[in-house]
Amino acid sequence: MQDTTSAFPRLNEPAPDFDAKTTHGDRKLTDYKGKWLILFSHPADFTPVCTTEFIGFQKAADTFRSMNCELIGLSIDSLYSHLAWTQNIKEKFGVEISFPIIEDIKMEVASAYGMVHPGAADTQAVRATFFIDPEGILRAMVYYPMSNGRSIDEFVRLLKAMQTSDANMVATPEGWTPGCDVIVPPPKSPDAIKQRMGEGYKTTDWYFSTKSL
Image 1 (spheres, rainbow, N blue to C red):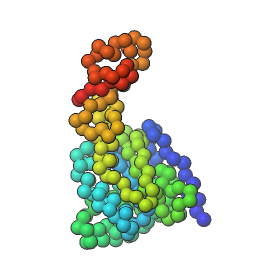
Image 2: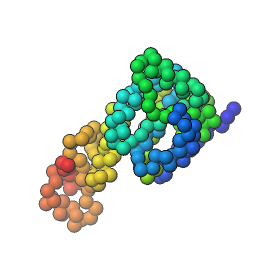
Image 3: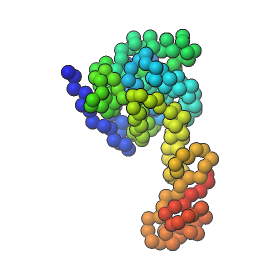
Image 4: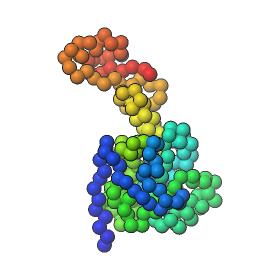
């Protein structure tokens, strides 16, 4: 049996590099330098939950591109299976998949990204989603069970939140969406605590301040 043991990549470190065949030709991680990239795995082609996810990602593809973000899918299936499945989605659901899908028969990319978990079938990757920033740094990882599809709207929200945090040196609260207040970093010294109340923020207590953008 093939060894599928893999180490999980770590946030805020360089994402594992890859050079893989896809439905749109060869793709490398460095091809996406200067852009955000969402790399996501799915258990298998021609499965119903995965089909809904691919349709969802495609419907949001223009939104992601407007945010300087590209999409790339992956499963441990052949290139021919990917091509046949995307053609089926076009014919049966009227949706043409515009982003590439990685062929990962040898599970090289899946293993590098921790997409194959102990106890899972050797031929299936879990529903894993990775957000890689324009410098190639892994910024977020989201895992879903086999039985339940992902929320693409949440990924759009999360990407916007991270971009907002990067641009403004702030954090975002639970459920944040554009237009909501953001969280100001808490003070880190006694003198900064004393100054906080007079800095013009919406301050509930010394450690909890928000502002609008």
